[in-house]
Image (cartoon, rainbow, N blue to C red; front, side):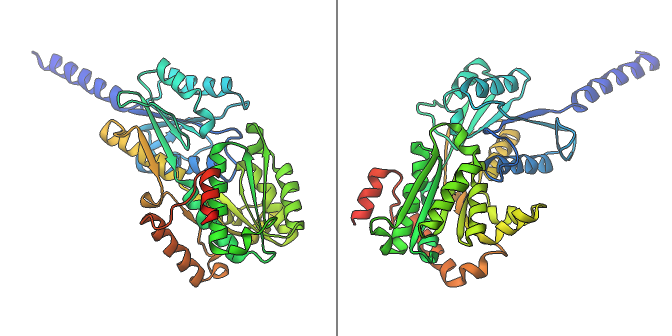
Amino acid sequence: MSRRDSLLFFLFLAGLVFAQTSGPTQKIGLAFASGGRGDRCDNDLAYEGLIEIAKNFNGYFTTSADPRHGGELEIKYLTPSQDTPQERLRVLRQLGQEGYRLVFAVGFLFSDVLPVAAQEYPNTHFVLIDGYLAGVQPQDNITVVDFRVHEGSFLAGMIAGLKTEGNKVGFIGGMNTERIQRYESGFRAGAVYANPMLKRPGQFLVEYIGDDPRAFNNPNRAYRIAQRMYRAGAGVVFHVAGASGMGVFRAAKESQRWAIGSGSDQGAVLAFDRNPQILEQARWVLTSMLKRIDRSIFLMTRDFLLKGRIADRYHILGFNADSVGFAVNQLNKDLLGQALIQQIINTRIRIMDQEIIVPANYRELEQFLRN
């Protein structure tokens, strides 16, 4: 081979290497729950998980408004335009069709449509975050991530029971489903465990915003419900209602009573808002029941990128994975007090050691309250 031919062959090989390395080596997609970013709850937590992925794996987003940390990993997120199964399936199909090898779906509402997309796109691995699917097999291209939210809610209930001044406690759920009832069951059990006076009739106030997905994006209705609860004497109201929770915080500020958030550390989130009215609401967030969606998304992606697979098809995350808990920050640590914080931590250990079995549904709650 002549020197000229050798040079051309070298340039050809270099071109192949450049072609293989200049573009993204992997593509990660995510489908938000209804409402998308800006809910200061599960969707925003999911987005934070994507940010951590981009930082650690030289990633960039397909939308130019998002930060860029490299060019090796392409990240795309989509939001269903309507709260319908057809629209949720359309979003998953789009990500599968566009070649995203790992696709997250945030929320239990994707449970019905995710298996359909997984069957249609066998080269894409789909991960359901905060949901449950029965019968997933090791060979399936599906992973399910669920959280022991009833145990985290138990701690939130303890805080509510110990800090309520009206000697009543309220719970506002979004869509009335068995999954949201898990939060309620754990919360009510924790409140009564810390404050047996709450066993008396009428001391625990419960209301759900609705029976369809719109319940998670209706802050005005949540505001009216919370107002009624505070007027009825609730000293603390805990919401598990997604973006609707902003209405609860508004009512808490106006009533000068406590609220407890869910998902993210919502007190800290509100404290950094540019809107002065929302900033003021942060003062009335007693704590939040943490559900680390961001952490789960990062860990699943890390395994997929570094190992080429996600080993288990079911991941049930709780205290042992530091994936549920309660928020302590600069705003509320003095308000809660070290003695109360330590009491909650000690209870967390007792739950992990199974000295306390936290109810996850109404039937188990009834049994717990009888003891």
